[in-house]
Image 1 (cartoon, helix red, strand yellow):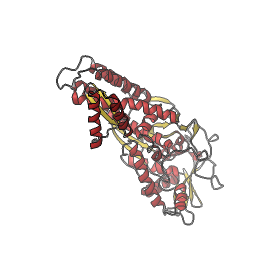
Image 2 (cartoon, one colour; image 1 turned 90 degrees about the vertical axis):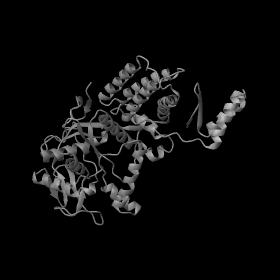
Image 3 (cartoon, one colour; image 1 turned 180 degrees about the vertical axis):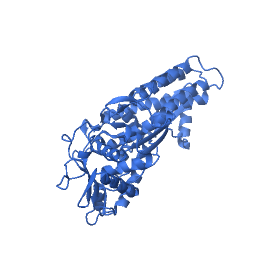
Length: 466
């Protein structure tokens, strides 16, 4: 089965055919770095990381760009509140963002360009729009002339009469049309600014991505992604800007993830129900949140709750335990012997199931079903008294191959037991031999309190940390 993706532009699944065989150019809108990211921000971060990972497992060379908006109205207001400069504010929250996504197992982008590093390219892009009569200057501001771009609204499937006023700007009499949006904003006294042909100012929100996409990836890219909330106005405006200048499609495939709700309510400042990722990962394992995010299809709304997290934790524990059991049995498995007939065939069948589901518009919940099928097969095999190392390796390698896409397994190396715990395990073993069950149970409970879980297996005692 070839990869098919749901293209927001056409409202249907399409076969994915990259512009250049074997290579994918992918741009995902990044954060405005004026605060820590919340769990809602985590959905596109995790989903598009999985898209990128999966494409790489399918032997594509992926150039993955995520930008930082490091100057805008929110940045200026927050910098004033904190009594720091806008660049200082940006440095603080860019570092925090990178730290937060790393905790979620997100791979580093190929490049994270910043608006402030691309001001000249942005000015040149605006100048090209003015020259082509797609933009006009009004008292130091520059606006995009939406009425001139006949395809405006093609991504969000709205026409000019139906479209709401743009975000991050207030409609005023300087605009020819209420739907015109700002490309360059004249600086107010005391604000950060750059010199331009239209006076001192800074870029509007939408133009930055158009300029950076063209600079780093070219006139047409393979995949442009982001949250559903960016479809309009942000991505709609990007299309209008870019295609007015280049005359070519900005992106061949537009992918948008749905919203994350909290306890069946939309996350909002007014409700005060936002949860920061850095706070969440202090309470639960980051892999649990990542697994939770992948447990629903990316185009379906997802509800965050204590119960849903608990279900994710339990499900992930089954997978992690199976993997840890494989590692444990591998150490004691017989080194010789033929792999049982049918194991390789069954694993190939499960692998195909996983790939087919990922090829169906990155259907991660169904792909996870294939992971559980693998876990069930592995657990049955590991229950045998004697297992072959080569067979255990096959199960492990297949699970690790799935995890290259999903990124849900904990790969932390086993920590050494301290002397006290080692002695307790030895004592418990002796207690069991002498049938002192009360002491054996007492030691197990004590170790559990210390975060050490014991498993009595035919091959001896196995332990793992909580």
